[in-house]
Image 1 (cartoon, one colour):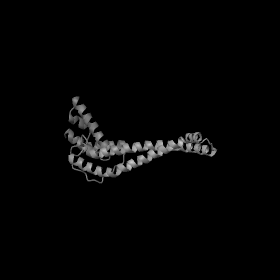
Image 2 (spheres, one colour):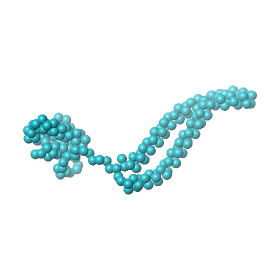
Image 3 (cartoon, rainbow, N blue to C red):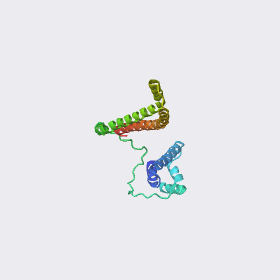
Image 4 (cartoon, rainbow, N blue to C red):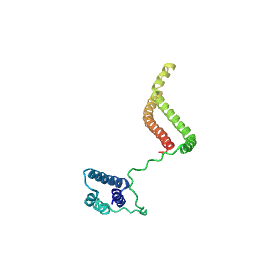
Length: 195
């Protein structure tokens, strides 16, 4: 039995483990075999020490005490175990062009909606600033008209309190809008690139 055959049988015998963990375990055995071979040990001696790969998988299952995971897929024919995960598909110019067209039409609706939401947020911020400065408006009115009405002063103080609450809400909404806009821009870029 060659090294690849041994590791292939081990890989396909460890179906009770998640794929990432199974691949990492087989890689660690591959590294162990490689280092032992560099130390001058023979493959036959290593395989005798490790035992049959199917029995080794059973020992690993027993050590982990993991119940077997039902696998509804039929067992694939033995193939070399995957050393490296497949590279992500990035697409080509045709995919980029197609996704660019789809994103263009999507953004025809999404961008004006976003601009409308940002303008509503800006007007809410301006209203909260105006409410904060309500006492100064009463003071300017008093200087201009030369008459003082206590009710307007109390109303301006109430407006200032409401302005403080509105400003706190505005800060939270502004941060959320910045995060949402950045996330939407990143999503557009990832979708166009094919990640």
